[in-house]
Image (cartoon, rainbow, N blue to C red; front, side, top):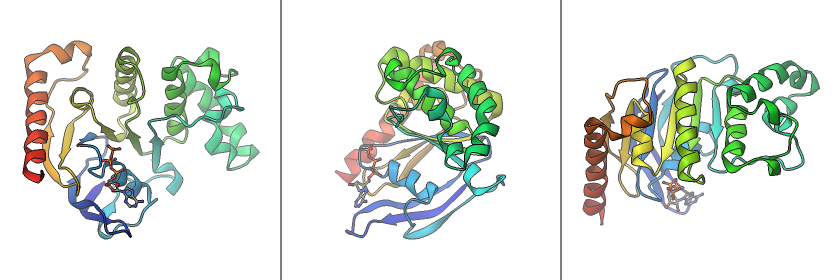
Amino acid sequence: MVFDHVTKQYPNGTVAVDDFHLDVADGEFVSIVGPSGCGKSTMLKLIMGLEPLTRGSITYRAQARDESAMTGMVFQQPLLLAWHTVLDNVLVPSTLQGRAQRRADEPRARELLAMLGLADFAERHPYELSGGMQQRVGIARALLHDPRILLMDEPFGALDAMTRDQLTMDLLDIWERDRKTVVFITHSISEAVLLSDRVVVMTPRPGRVADVVDIDLPRPRTLQTISTPEFGRLAAHIRSVLDTAEMVTA
Ligand SMILES: Nc1ncnc2c1ncn2[C@@H]1O[C@H](COP(=O)(O)OP(=O)(O)OP(=O)(O)O)[C@@H](O)[C@H]1O
């Protein structure tokens, strides 16, 4: 996926993203970190085609079976339908395509629920699940149609620290298995370092690329990776780039 000098100005004149340039390899895990309001969510909306670009382009290298299988999206809140079971929530994208599609996709939905440790909860309702389990349902739903690109907008932001760590490890497992291209938005430097091949550090609004940091930590990574000196060095570097970018624009 190539972001070629992407600029987004909203109709009210706000420039949310300015000249964002990045080449994301197929199967790469890229995180975007930056201060609040620097245009991270806007980037995702541009990728999803929910907002038109003002200038520049976003192009895909990989081919998908169809357009709808190109991207899967995980939000900060899992956005589950309270009156549907867990299984039906995962199958929402199929149900929208008709009953036959729903039937065809049910085995895959059950397989994803099992992979995320929710096999026994398929017939339950969202209110019976913890926050972390609800977010797993959101992840299963995003993976249902095997998207080429997984977009994640602070998916663990609303969770407590332990659940967050667990889901981070689960996401690493899932990614190691089939190496989707992931664009992951987060406020957490350590989450970004632990997960990513590269971390894009953005400046305060209008969001520009302040630095792109290669995360050359060996994989598979574990929570112990966080206590290595190399991890500390990378996290400190990203912190200093963020601080410098804030001082320059302040
Ligand atoms: N529809 C819109 N119309 C006008 N301005 C907008 C619109 N959506 C976002 N903005 C502005 O664009 C800027 C970037 O917003 P965006 O939500 O992309 O930032 P963010 O980095 O995701 O923020 P946060 O980390 O707080 O979620 C902000 O100043 C925001 O107020």
